[in-house]
Each structure stands twice: as structure tokens, then as C-alpha cells.
Length: 289
Image (cartoon, rainbow, N blue to C red; front, side):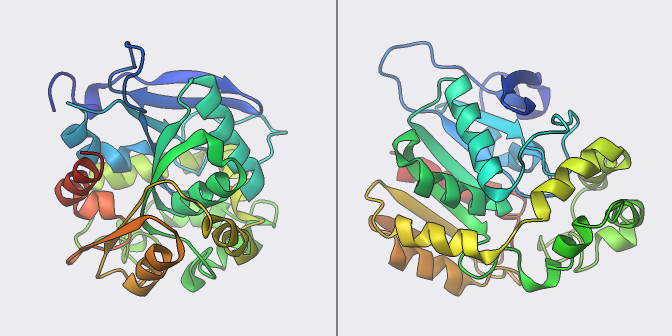
């Protein structure tokens, strides 16, 4: 990457219905007719920092926009009245795209961010230039079975407090019920701490509880029905060692969505941008060459 590294990019803020979203951007469009920007969507209990290695490898030629969505690792809470149901989150992303004048955008998504990317693309395809999905929730896996305890827990007042408390301990963070199976190698300690630190605040826990309490496979199953007629370019990049999202799911997405190309990344797991940023960046660069 030339110029400022992702870690040094300043946080900016944009107002959307329901609150404010922080984001980082590498190089805003300055010329008429320039290529559509890349908008990176992360999953729950992480933030835009998950894309740091990928963006550092793409920002020399791509306009990269990386928001911190209200998924539990964000620092600025949404309004108490914000709609953060799955359809509401899709609207938040849609409003972000329109507020920053990104449309038509190249959408790049990982983990549960991939589910919201599918929902948004199915609802408002005109906003989307193309779609890159990495290991993510899809079909009946929203959430994966091992994490479905979070949905009923999030419906209980204060139910996520013990989860936030437990995540203070590295042994818990490295368990399969947290980040343990998400990467092939342990996350750096400072990255883990940055992901879990915001959960100390009750309004951040309120936001992520609202996101999770209505999560259900009916949303991803409905989205794929519409995406079977989505004619714009799609790239599916999947780590083949994922224990949450088996590679068969990625292959099925590539089979179900027209004009989809499939790339397998050996040895990588669910957090593909953490495990294989170089390989993922190369796949994205080749896709848009």
C-alpha cells in the first residue's frame, strides 16, 4: 500500500437514520467516472480492523471504505430507538452507501457481514455494482449452530453482560464459543482486546443484543431465492478449513448465484481476512482486473 497504512487512517463519522457510523476511507473518489469503491462489511464481535491486512494490499489502486458496524466491537453507540433487526441492519448499510455517495458499490463481506450483504443485495440490487463474499452465514447457517445460544440470550435484559465479562479472559476468547475456531492461528492479543473492549459499555451491548435477537435463517434463505436471479459479477472466496462455514456452503453459493466465480483458500478459516489477507487481496484484485 502506498501512503497511509490502514492503522493510521483517521476515523470519520457519517449520520444515518438511527445514529452515526464510524468508518475509515483510503482515498475518496475525486474524478468523474472513476471505479466504484469497495465497501467492506465485517461480522459480529469484530470491527473494521478485521480488514486491515486486505485493505493495506488494495489501497494503492482501490477506494476502500471500511465502517465499524454496530455489531458489538464499535465505539459509538447507535440511538436507543435504532432498528437493528436483520432488515434494519440492511437499511443501515443502505443508508451508509447513500450518505457517502458510494452507489453503485462493490460490496465485500465476511462472517455475519456476509449475511447482511446478501439481504441488502436481494432488497436493493441497484445499489450494488458487484459482490465479494468470503466465509459467511448463508442458507440455514445464520448463525452457525454453535452460536445460536446468543439469540435467546440477547432477548434477556442484561443477558450479554456475562458474555462480555467472560471475554475479558484470553482462554475464553480462544475457545470455540468465541474466536477459537475463527482463525487458523490465534489472533494477536491487541486485536482481540480491541474487539472485546467496547462490550464493557451497556449501550454497546444494547446494540449488539438488538442485532442478534431476531437473527434467523429465514432471512438468508429468502435472500438466496432473490440472488438466484442476480446477474451482476460475484466472487466467492472461501477458506477450506472453516469449522463454522464448511466449504460446501461456498461452493453452493457459487452454484446458485449466476455469474459467480469460486476461489478456495487452503488452510484458512472463517475470518478469512485475518488468516489470508494476501491471498484474499490477490483474488479481489484479479476479479476486478
